[in-house]
Image (cartoon, rainbow, N blue to C red; front, side, top):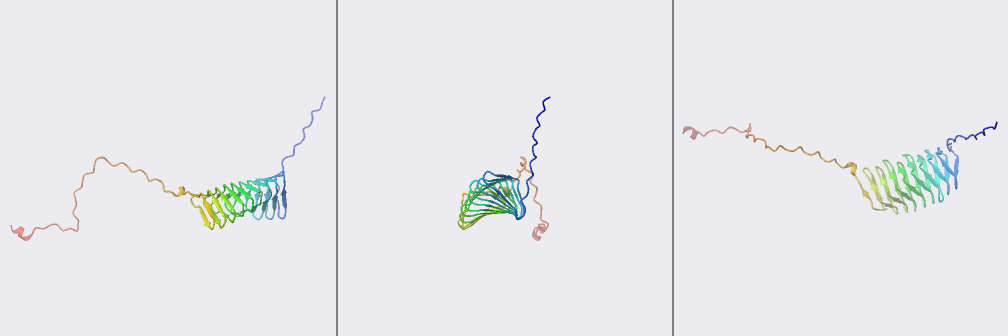
Length: 229
């Protein structure tokens, strides 16, 4: 009787292991890391052609992108994310303790900024949302395109450039020597609601009431001469 061939055992996928203090993870051309945990003191270096998906950068941890095609997508940043020339970070959530540095030639896209973001010479941020407590600083040569400022602050320093910013209720844009074009200010959240319609008045006017005497007014008296007549 012929034996049934045994199926090869498939190894269960390994859970992502954290990058501990003083440890470094290198992701180079063609490599992909997923759901990486970068703890305090740990470093992830993504070079040209490398990709990281859904990393968690703890307070004190570092994620660095350098080189054409270096990509980090969907990172949660409580530490520091640095985007150098050729690197792109997309869809990051930068929490209150987090910081993103978009350096020369780097690109950040569609981030949610609740912490700090600095965009410097020839760095670009596109389509990010600056939420309550968040701050985006466009330094000399840095550009912010189509940002939405919703409760946070966008500051454009000398030599910085902002285009197409939408400022919603509670948001602020500060031009400190910088240049902004195409800004839209929307405060719909604070507009008063329309007054309720009045009830229609009755078609029959109310009967006029007779004027009443003021209590303070004395009653008219006849003159003494009139009384004698």
